[in-house]
Length: 358
Figure 1 (cartoon, rainbow, N blue to C red):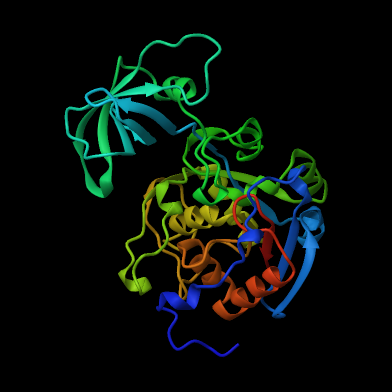
Figure 2 (cartoon, rainbow, N blue to C red):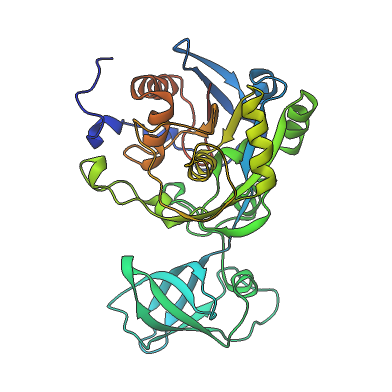
């Protein structure tokens, strides 16, 4: 492939994907996916299986996973004033109990309106009425809203919400299988509106085999936000405004990973969310405790400080996630890997197959 004139042009990060290669259902087993292995040093690409992962990394290397948990953040209801249908997404809550939501309906919502929530999944028993009172609209079409009667967000979401799925899955309401499989086995901390999808491949059995082969295992948290669904709309990377997400990595995890680096073993990031967290926490040169939002945009030219390998899914064209992969892998090699994956009928996106970049 000839070298592109400028890696700032978004067209460099485009590709055509046949619709039938979009994985809209999970495989029967988490650890049954195929794995495309990309060796950056040898400029070599080969097809393997995700079950081969324990043999593809070395004893003493460390896998780092994102232990965020996907919220049942998708909501449904109707406008009390007009009776019109409303659909929304819970994005988070504030210290005073107000929610941040987005929603869509016919017509224009107004401050002071009330949304009456309806359980997305029919409840086994009647549930009390629940409303959201719209207070004000802020940047990005987001509304501040007050739940009435007041209540804990998780309790109300469990009662009225469902797991949001990426638009390309084309399923309006998550199934029982989705609620199990669009969640990692190590999910601990609720707060995400999308799954850290590289981690979906790791079954308890595969994790045990990795540990038995001498691999370390560390956790951090990044709550995947709405921005993960949004493609880059500008024509150049310079003009793109990166979305912000909250993440946290503990002092103990930083110490463990710094020791891994000092011993010349590899830190293997399981997913792009792990990369964003680690690179944000290592801006000073070494990993340090981090508990804040990050809007780090990782693009070609970025100097990676914290990771040595990346396990990731196949991402949408013209997305910040594919740009990150190109930054780590090299744009030409990443494009070649995607062409090979398409030619060999790999499954793409959240429920799809994986790629290991060494």
